[in-house]
Image 1 (cartoon, rainbow, N blue to C red):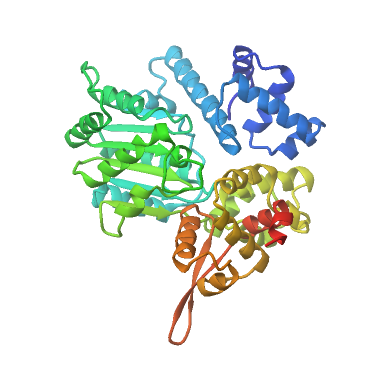
Image 2 (cartoon, one colour; image 1 turned 30 degrees about the horizontal axis):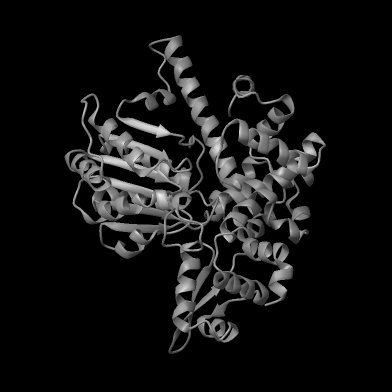
Length: 449
């Protein structure tokens, strides 16, 4: 928990007004726009305007939920620096957890605190085996927004940090140019030695790989999707960030003794083309929390109606962020009664979670949207054959399959295998929250299809 005094100090530094500070405090606490409006007794538009001013004053780029995440990470990073500085000034013998971040061979730039962490024992064991035993060079954590990729990456890095000489955890929400990023990493690994770096991208990457061969380094890049272009192509990067794709390709192909861990809502081409079950490049699709771990979230939030928690967890497919947002609404509006909340289907996609889906939906191609509309309308498992029959004749089978693959890589489709007597069929559907979002937000457009 970030202290109120620190937020007040930061607000003064950035010229944030008292009204904006109140919104900021609640947003940092994880409250949705609706909840903040109710607590402050103002309109939701007023909340959004005050948040927009806060983003502007903190110089937070981007759009949608990305901006709030960037703001939270910036403030958390500043608070961690403040905490470390305070503890180091108070007593040379008062060591605590935060002072580990002062390790000169480690960078945790904006990494969240994972002292409270739910479940994921199986995923952690799998990732540790891939990285430590199987010496994977590139490992990707893939999953929809809010599923817990960032927290898992930090928990993993903390868990295996003793196996590495250097650790760099870097969020790409700020997306520095690739040459600047490489220069920063190389200079950190070379410190205190001063080096003259080459200018070309290829040579800089070669320089980095040389260090990754000499030392055991764990490099974590969080939110790779931020550097992917939003022109409806999963395969492409924003022009000025295309060098990141070259970096991923070379780190996966070339021999070294380090590991690059990536988190993303969308799968980059370089990972898709190189990954295999037993190779040096692998990806783990993150599903929702197991019921026991998800129930702990609801217990910590103080909800009642335990007999209906499983229904709530299944509705959100165990998505930790979605459950926390829903729990906050249940606590604030329905006095903690889960049964009351579940009566209102329209509430399943809250404002904060809707912003995540807004960001993803805007990146979809027209064909991807066609499929989303159809699956939302059908509200059932659908085969590739049925999808082909429902789509316009201009959409060929190969285009349909590529589009389904793209939607899977965007973490928007659920896939199940239907076992028959002599055949196996792949079926697709939408998660309840995604289906509710498409139905409520795009009803007019969808009904035309």
